[in-house]
Amino acid sequence: MAGNNPSPTEYIQHHLQNLTFGYHPENGWSMAHSAAEAQEMGFWALHLDTMGWSIAMGVLFIWLFRKAGKVATTGVPGTLQNIVEMVFEFVENTVHGAFHGRNPVIAPLALTLFVWIFLMNLLKLIPVDYVPEIFLRLGVDYMKMVPTTDPNATLGMALGVFLLIIYYSLKVKGVGGFAKELSLTPFNHWALVPFNLLLEVIGLLVKPLGLGLRLFGNMFAGEVIFILIALLPFWVMWTLNVPWAIFHILVISLQAFIFTVLSVVYLSQAHEHH
Amino acid sequence: MNINMTLIGQTIAFAIFVWFCIKFVWPPISNALHERQRKIADGLDAASRASRDLELAQEKADATLRESKEQASQILEQANKRSSQMIEEAREQARAEGERIVASARAEIDQEVQRAKDELRAQVSHLAVSGAERVLEASVDEKAHRKLLDKLAAEL
Image 1 (tube, helix red, strand yellow):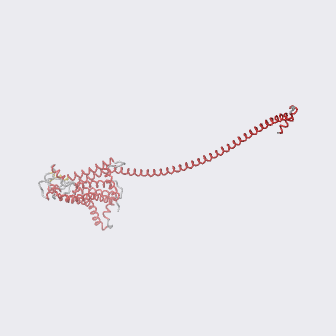
Image 2 (cartoon, chains in turn yellow, green; image 1 turned 45 degrees about the vertical axis):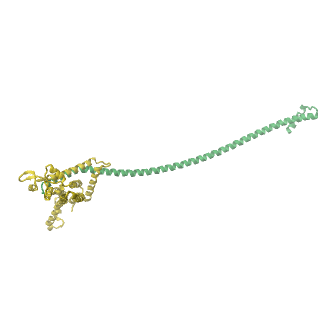
Image 3 (cartoon, chains in turn yellow, cyan; image 1 turned 30 degrees about the horizontal axis):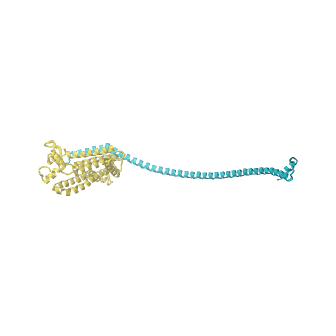
């Protein structure tokens, strides 16, 4: 645990604080040494742990799948190739079922989302104290390991999906078509245009928000429970820790899957004419 | 849990990973999978074709076997016929030969009998002459009676 026997509140807060580097009004560009300092940095700050771990997981994904793809033979596949191909086919089938247009970007996008989010979520099964403790010994104050418990990460990905939704809506339907869709559905009458617009814009904005917050909420809640369990005496921890971790094997894959499928569905809607 | 630049950073990272996936990860796996699918389909095709070929070959073999069996039985039959014919011919020949041998033997016997008769006849005439000589105790002029004696011998 961090420090000399911190109180439960301190312990939890410490575990939920990101390693932040940013522009502090007084200290300039620097590492944040407390939650308050990180707060004061406002928008111009970067969560180094979130970025680091998420990029590490992304690179791991690319490396694994690239390796499998390179050695991918048409003969008898090896273990890694089998796993990769299983995931690949799973994603391909999912995309095939949910996306009805023809777009070579969607399936790789779905694969990236699924595996990347899954790997980031997977970090959560590493006991909550291991990695922060190691980094503390190395002189790093904060280390919030799981990127998907940071709303920046989940909303960041959702923002990417949102930009693609806008891009494909404009590309497929044209500016006029997209505007017409926003203003004349669900009620096709000129008098109801403002109402439609309000409804549709909210509906549009809710898509990425829902995507990001759903993933964040699930992962964050799970993480908090893990931290709370870690406050128990060590000899009873496993009674709660083990079932919760086993349950989370389901949750992490399910959440990765939900994010992926919903992204594909939204992008499919962006391709459809009404 | 502040919303900050991490959001943008994450979006950029996401975009880069997606691009990388589209460019370098998806195509080789996809190609390999489709290639393998094609290969498997080809293999199954080949297998079914081979089994059909096998069936055809089996049928052909059966037909050939049946044909050769027929031929063999035909040849056998012919040979049988031929052998019985040969036996018949040989039998015929043997009988002819036998008859011929019997006939010639008979002719020889006849000849022999004839000769014996002739000899006998000559001896008898001689005997008769000498008998008559003795009976008559007189010499008969053989020359004078030759004609008579020959006539007598011819009558025997």
